[in-house]
Length: 251
Image (cartoon, rainbow, N blue to C red; front, side):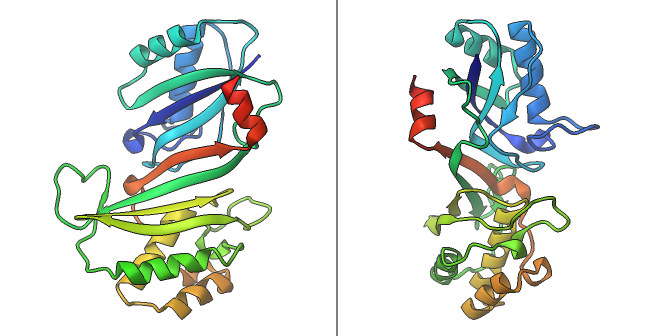
């Protein structure tokens, strides 16, 4: 049988989601916990991967296990066994053809910036005291929806077949001294969100214009885009599946 597992993690002390040969990853930590609690060897396939230091408020993975078990009891045991920076919410039986990665149709990330020095936000938000034109940054963010090729925001030398992504929404909102950027797409390239945010920051500080921003996208060159903002302000916040996959999750 196949199961989906929904969980969250603070990525501060992990080298991303994916297995690393000489570093601790979320995938390795969660897999070992599942194997210990369930008493079986298994593999976890995540809905995607996050880089070192990036957080996830919602993440899915799937695993196969040829036995039934009390999901609520296993969730309770996992949360007692796992370190405090990983939390499991639910384990759901799904169809054998369900796939946490390939069935995901929409993913949403948020990037958090605080503009006032806040000692309680340092590990979970990027401190940037610069004066930013948020309205102008939102105008630039709208330009993302007009394009599909985002090679300029991708990490170089990455093994992908296409740089095309469908961006559904991208916008900034300000809450007192907190700035939050939200972006949703069908898929994301490595380092894409952090590079987009860094380039939008350059728009907000008037280093580049809206025309410059669009020309950067058209250039397809990472060297033309802005800097990558620090990982600790980035969160994977939501993963959506189409009707069939959603019905699996509700089964």
